[in-house]
Length: 266
Image (cartoon, rainbow, N blue to C red):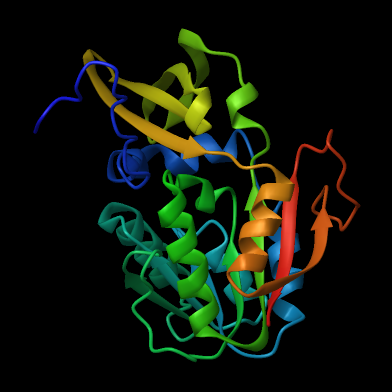
C-alpha cells in the first residue's frame, strides 16, 4: 500500500473496520452506556408502519429483537459476520426465527431488488456515522430510497457533535465483569476536524484468573449537523417529516443529546 505524499492526508479508515473485533464486547459496553433507552422509540415507530422493517447495521440484535417481539417482521443487514453470529444466536434462543431475517451485506449497496417495499428503514444509534466518506452516505441514502415503499419512512438516529468531543489518551472508560472475566476498557480518542471524523482507539483487557488478554481495534465515525443531514436526505429524494431531540418525540434544539430525523420517500 502506498503512503500519502508530503502534504497529502491519509485516507479515512473504512467505517466498517473494527466491528468484527468489537462484537464480543458490544453488548457488554452498550448495556453500561445507551442501555435500552432508545428501544421503545423504535418499537413504536415500527408499530406505526404496515409492512416489513429493514434495520441497517443490525449488529448483535439490540434493536432487532425487541422490535420483532413487538410484532414487526424485521430484516436486519450487517457487514460483520461476528456481529451477525451473535444476533442469530439470540434469535434462536428467543424463538423469533419466523419474525426476523438476517442478511450479510453492505448498506451502501443494499442486496435487495428495487421497490422491495419496506415500510420502514431504521438507522439506529449512529450507524450512518460509520460512513466516513461523502459518497458512502450518498450511495446509502439512494439505495435505501430504492427499497422503500412509496411513502415509506426512514428513521435516522445520530450521535451529536462527535468532532467536539475532547481528545484524550488511554482513559479507563469502563470496568466490570462478564462470564467470569474482569473486563477493562481503556480508550483513546483522536479527531480529524476537517473531515469531521472521530476515531476511538479501543483496548479491552480481559482477565480470567492469571490469564490476561488484550484486544485492540479502532472505530471511526463521521458527524454532520442536522441541517447538513437534512439537505442530503432531500437531495436523495426524501421529505423530512420531523427532527426530534429525544426518544419521546420532543423537539430538537442545538443542545439536544439525541438527534433523530424522520423522512419519507417521495
